[in-house]
Length: 59
Image 1 (cartoon, rainbow, N blue to C red):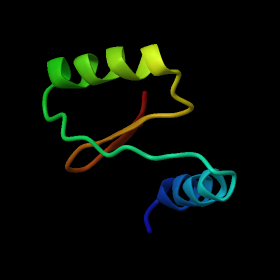
Image 2 (cartoon, rainbow, N blue to C red):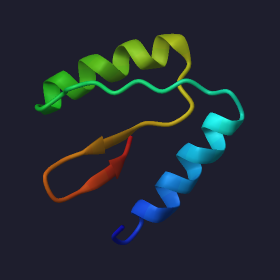
Image 3 (cartoon, rainbow, N blue to C red):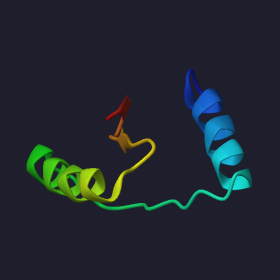
């Protein structure tokens, strides 16, 4: 694991242990990401990250 990936994975493990559900979605463009986040905001998400080729961004 590189950089902050370890902390993120540990957070995912803790969230799963607390019974949280995960959704993985393909959103290659900024427009796709914003559309997905519009849906996520309506249902009340806890956290979101966008994985690009070389970066990981908290949304």
